[in-house]
Amino acid sequence: MNKNVCVTFFIFLISCITMFAEAKPERIYLWPEGAPDSKARMNEPEKIEGKNVTNVHHPSITAFLPKKPNGTAIIIAPGGGHKKLCLGHEGDALAVWYAEQGISAFVLRYRLSNEKGTPYDLQKHAMADTRRAIRLIRHRAKEWKINTKRVGIVGFSAGGELAAYSAMKSDNGDKNSTDPIEKMSSRPDFQGLIYPGKSATFTVEKGMPPCFIAFGYHDRHDISFGMAEVYLKYKKAGVPCDMHIYANAGHGFGFRPGSKTAAGEWPKRMLEWLKDTKLLN
Image 1 (cartoon, rainbow, N blue to C red):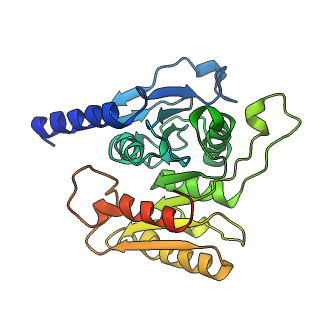
Image 2 (cartoon, rainbow, N blue to C red):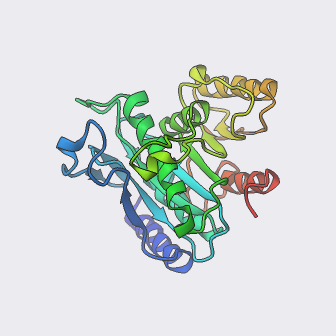
Image 3 (cartoon, rainbow, N blue to C red):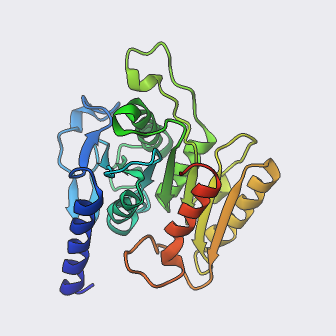
């Protein structure tokens, strides 16, 4: 990407935030006093290279709040193979677009289980961050004008795995906890799986949240064939599911404002699906 394109994209983000967001995006730590197993390193700075982030030891969400919220909230889990977080085309840009639609968007920075020398595990730590984010948004729903029954998650690639797992295994919260956030449910009300990995590990049971799936025909075999099989699991279980396969796309198309490709328009299809599913006014 040349310098002029980068500058144009940056100006686009700033203008959209100014037009549609209630305030400057706010970084909110999931555990203000440090996440379990990470307190010793919570003040260690993240490493930023372009739009990618590594060395996450203080997991957080960044809130993009619209001026006129419609009650729906979406957590965005960026991809990056659990080695990094791709916050550009799989994070902040989409959050800005959601805010334009009146949706409260939250970009998740979760701990990375494949980063070199990492002490973290996907199921133990990255999933703890994901579930904590869902609980936190429900805890502050009144403040942010969010309907607690319209809190969902969309994830790309590695982040799509987190979205899928959050729908597969959740709980109603610990009512005896002294932490008010932990009293909230971790169940997402809907899920968006955008070219996720590890599809062979996905299970579907009756009563799971409705699902939106999007991937490219030219993606890896385990995604292009695996997600088609996952769709059939949703169908068999009677869980509503929308699936979009883009014939001219591969892996990592994400969301890039101004894209003229069919795959680049997938957020509009998800918006239509949310309206049809009565999860968006």
